[in-house]
Length: 425
Image (cartoon, rainbow, N blue to C red; front, side, top):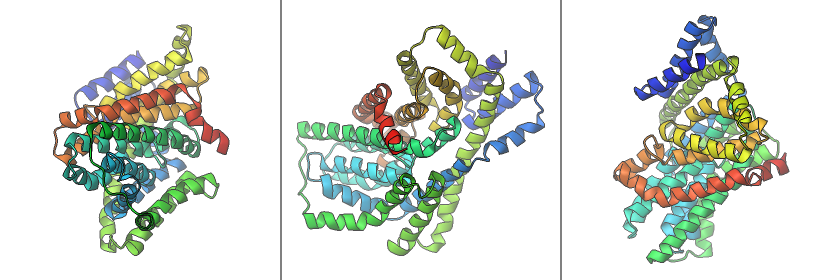
């Protein structure tokens, strides 16, 4: 009765267009108040306690660091570096957009921010060079999804907090899958450009490449500080986020000199709004998870699936289908907070590594970012290009299918995700 009421209220509110965070909190609160003997006054206390986690401090920090670098010229310098490396190949400019997205993803930790930063620079350049608009926006929208897979990833932090696993290990686990999918996107773009006969740009000289590397080096050091510092044990992921903020502020104001102190307040305000939205979702999702736990709903689901004879391979297929459709209608943070408490206990019982499971979840969220009706990257890419949502979706399809192939590989070859964490830790 409780589980039926909870999920009926949740999906009914979502169907009415109520924001996911409010739908989570309201359905849980109504169920707790009317169907259990839980003290209603304790609900607010439980929400505040759910945010009292050290790891969650990294979320506003990484958002702020990404916004500081996005507002300045760091993205342009990263694009220039990528263009100098692969711009002379068939499909050089789209290839440059993908490579720039990979680099910026490792700086910002956000998928929409990556699409905005790279797309606002590269879309016009690719279109002006004679490429079809669909080819331009397809590469930008899909490669931007790497922002939630390649560390630092805000989505991975949320999964780590929800699943109570090491965020450092999750960051390491995302590197090889992220680079693998990026390589697949580059390959598909290269083959497509070669078959369509797109012209090549003039190859950059070694001196020009070195100059581009020098110009982008300050921004690239952000990646070194974050990944290198965590790997070397110098600081935790949360401390790394703080270092990233101060480093981004330093290079934006004193090195690149493209942000004035008077503009920092605007960046802080924008970052605070984004952080508040994510943390509000987390607070509401945590009381939802609390109700699931006290009513033994995950345990009942686990027992039912095991009694039905579900194998690990079949379970992972079911997980991918569930997550794919959930990602179509909910943003990544909400999907993780709602479904991971239900699915992870089953995965653990079946012997699936929680780090591997986390990477599977994140890659599914990548697909959710570029599939309608809620695919955030589609909306961002549409606003950049002026194309309709339908046109952007169709344009992204070849690269979306490439990510789908990457998901299958990541799902059924665990060592793609687990090699680095097991080796380093």
